[in-house]
Structures are given as C-alpha cells and as structure tokens.
Amino acid sequence: MKNVFRIGTRDSELALWQANDVKKKLEGLGYSAQLIPVKSDGDLDLTQPLYSMGITGIFTKTLDMALLSGKIDIAVHSMKDVPTVLPNGIIQAAVLKRGNYKDILVHKGLDFLNTEGIIATGSLRRKAQWLHRYPLHEVVGLRGNVNTRLKKLEDNSWNAAVFAAAGLERLKKVPANYTELNWMIPAPAQGAMMAVTKKEDQFSKEALASINHKRTEICTRVEREFLNELEGGCTAPIGALATIENQFLHFKGILLSLDGQRTVSINEKIELTQVDGFGKTSARALLMNGGEELMREIKVSLNQ
Image (tube, rainbow, N blue to C red; front, side):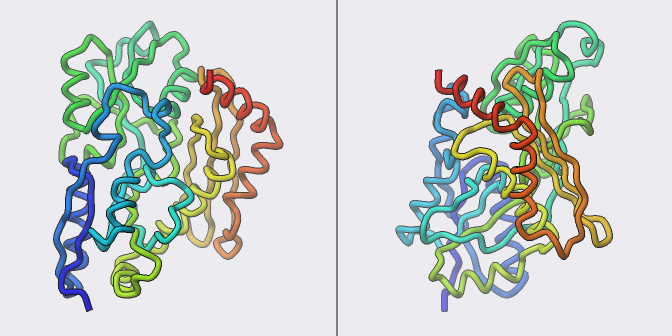
C-alpha cells in the first residue's frame, strides 16, 4: 500500500490548482498525497503556435514519461490537452466534475465588433469560429499561461482575447470586461480535468475511481471519440460539446476551414443508453457530409 500518492503536474498556476483539487479530494477520502511539478515542452516554448509544434501531447508527454519511469503515481491534466489515444501503459483513471465549458471574450470595449478589430488567441478552433462570425477582423497568436496572456492583452493594441472560462474562474481572474461566447462550440473536453495512472497500478486506479464524475466522463468520452475519428493525427479547427439532460445526451460538433468561411456541423440528441460509439458515428456522419474533403484541405494547408 502506498504511503503518499505522488501527483505529477505542470507547474503553471492553473495546472497546480487542478492538481491540488485532485489532492484535496484524495485526502478527503483518507489518502495522503504530494505534488510533483514539472515543466512541459509546451510551457518552455511560448513563441511557436501549438499546431506547428506537433500539438498532440505537447503538454502531457513530460508527465507521461515521469509516470512510466515511476517518478510519479498519478498525473493530472486539463483534459482538452490530452491526446485522444493515451500512451501504452497509461490509462484514464478519473474525470473530475466539469467546470464552465464555455469560451469567454476578455475585451476593452465591444464597439469594434461590427467594424474592424484585432482578436488574440492561440487556438485554431477559436480563430476559425471567430472569423466565421466576424470575417473583417484580424486574429493574432497568443501563447502563455493565464497571467501572461492577460498581461499581453493589456500591453498590446488588441481589442480582445479569447479565454477558456474555466481557467479564469478557477484562478479567480475573470476581469470586469468580459462576455460569454455562447455561440462558440468549445474544444472537446474543455472545462474537464483528467487523472491518469499506470495500467498495472491497481491501488491508484481504485483511489481515483472514487473521485470519478460519471456524467462528465460520459460527455467527454463522446466528445473525444468525435475528435479522434475526425483528426486522424491532424490538428484542425474542431469543436464538440455533449451535455446531459434528463435521460438524453445532446451533442453539437463542428469542423471549420482554417479561415472560418466553411463549416460542417452536426446537432443530435440520443438516449443515454445508446451513447456507446456515438462520438464515432457522429464524426463519420459529418465526414460524409463534406467533412472529409475539408479535412484533406486542412491537412494540406497545415503541412505547407
């Protein structure tokens, strides 16, 4: 039996908040735990766009290596950063109750919306959806942790920047000037946290199973299935959101061209008893409805 769970985490303020949340939940069940912070490749290079760095696993592979080498027992991630296929020997052991899944616009006033403006974001998904709605605007890259990005917005002449609501809310850093982007479909699993461990670590698996939130697990599984089936190893502007109401799962998914001018989307409802494989079938329906051609074009553009 372990004396103390060693919880691996990135060393950003938000990542530490998330790991501490898992730590507190485990301690509330009588376990002991300590945090082991590490720096990821994605945190060390803040100049390149994520899609040009080989985004898959850029924020998770350092922790994967620490887990597989026995330096930590558990790793905690923002679930939207986790590749849809985990490395051999590592399993998803818990999904925490989802926070706010929405994107929000932090701005310096909204007069620019119907004219020309400059928006900052490091996300292809946010950029494409923004340009679809506001084609006259310019979108510039924005990287770094929450504090860094807020400071860059303050120091530049940009009109606004797009953030994940959950991150700002968890750190109590939601500025006065913001608006929720209810029309923007979030990244798959946005607002959720995942804890992983080694496949053979039965003790960690049992402990983490005690803090798993079943409804969030179901919704994020559908979203990540959708993403996995669409991507095929390619980064693309993809949004997905599953929500549960009564005994039904509502699902919205979208794929956009890089400039946001073309979209293929799906909006479905299914009984909870029928959700197995639903993310995959939704992705296939979208691919058959024009998504396959759009994905080919995106891959060509990103590889140029």
